[in-house]
Image (cartoon, rainbow, N blue to C red; front, side, top):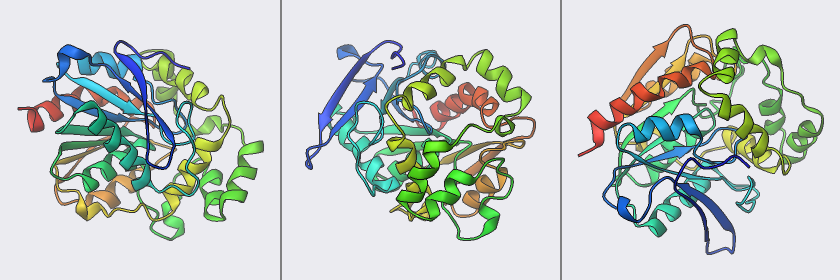
Length: 284
């Protein structure tokens, strides 16, 4: 599994007996340090990888991240919704004694960042979704612009269909742009390694993620009351820009930063600037 950059790895037990793994770059002396919660993509381990940890530390921020059910260290929760996974995050924060926080997610982490804000409006000070997937709105336009939508289409047919797809699926290299590949070779190299580690113990986490994305999330975007920043690559072939536009129209305090030349991975290079926005918006 990918290593946490500083801090600690722990777990909590949920009332249903499940174990939930978390990662925390803070320590005993960081109780007053502003917290950002990082929601990982699909598939990843939830570890706070180097580019996230370094960008946060440079701005005096502590990062907490949680492995979603079915990923290494967190027991599966069949039939989970986006809101169910977000509730695990809030339980971890309760256990750590964290009250107010900002919530950020990339790709499949975007829905979970938004869900945390919807479930805990009095605690969330700001939200950032980078290349985040939108709720399934029920027609083919949702898939338009995706280089390889087969996994999500299979999820619409149910768990058995999505699990069967996972047994034979291979990554489509057309999903990433040249800038994406350059980013994976450079500042975000740790992302590729962590994605491999996130899938190393099987497909459960990834399958359950996709099922949750195309089902009702358990929260509405209109319930997000905190300032919300959507960061989107104009050349994203995994989650097209139409998803960000759709969400912007439904968020109460939404703002969109469209980066026309960026793809699904290269847009993550905007994280430091997005964290500056978080600090200016929420940290006090």
